[in-house]
Amino acid sequence: MKKMLNILVALFAAVVMFGCSTAKADDSGWYNDYDAAKKIASKQNKNVLLFVNSVYDIDGSQNAVKLLLETPEFVNGLKDSYVCVHFDFTDIMNLNVIDENAKPEEKKAFEKKRATIEKQFAVADALAIQTTPAIVLTTSEGYYITNVQFDFASDNVEGYISMVKNEADTVKEVNDMVAATKKGTNLERVNAINTLYDSQSETHRLLLSNLCREVVKLDKNNESGLLSKYLFAVANADAYEKLIKLEIAEAIKVYEKAAEDTRLEAADKQNLYYIAANILASSGTTDYEYVVKLLQNAFDADPESSYAEGLQKTIDYVKEMQEQAKQAAADANADAK
Image: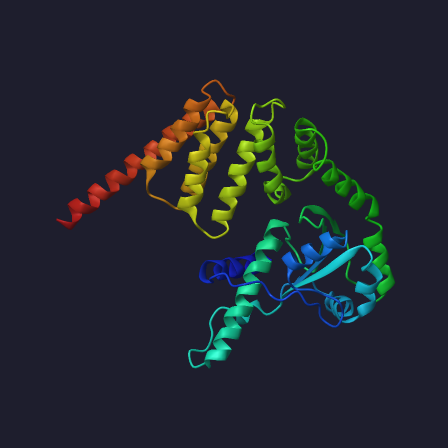
């Protein structure tokens, strides 16, 4: 799966975004446009079922994948509650380079298909899909509900339908939490958003970025005591959008700018600067001075925190690396002479 992710990240760096595919289901009822499916689900008061398979599907799952994709009974059995979407990553090996002698219409079709894969991968990544085949349930807003644990070994369509329907309690619980975010006083909505946010994993919280922004708007005076938490969450979401496009410098700027907000609590300010420093250091930079600056900002934000001592040790370590790099460069220049 890691190999697949590396290939898809490479696609992400090379492809210019194109328009959405048309909202049309195939003969078995599957859509391939997630955004369009969410809109349909919203209008019909349904949720979304996302089925992802790839060239790296687990062994022995091929027959089950074929059964679910080519048998209308599966989608028909769930159509009252779900709009079903399929992402096919089985052809990614052929989406790196097109024949330079290809005809214009072939190049256009190639770029369109590659752009579709890129957009689909962004969704799969946000939903933290690590292995395939995978079936994930989301709300019509795109908020994560649950993964459906299939073994993909059975040839019984009814069995697969039952496994999805068995998640009804979880589906209702998440949708009830989402509904609560849309009604009541500003403070009640903020607390409802916080309940939903805390129920999600750290990765899936990125899908709630629009609600995080709502908290910042609804509670400008920090009546809930949660404002700093959601300023931090918004920064994470904004930086993620940069990172997934490999815009490292821009992501760091997002964290730095967010850390300057005077409404932040010291701990959150410290964390933002530290994350920025960590991303920069992990990028392979030799700009040790910049790394030290970010780490020092993190330390200064909350020098009495439980992380301060570790931060100071890290600062000292990076400074030592910086001196070693300077000495190595000096030695190299001397040898050259």
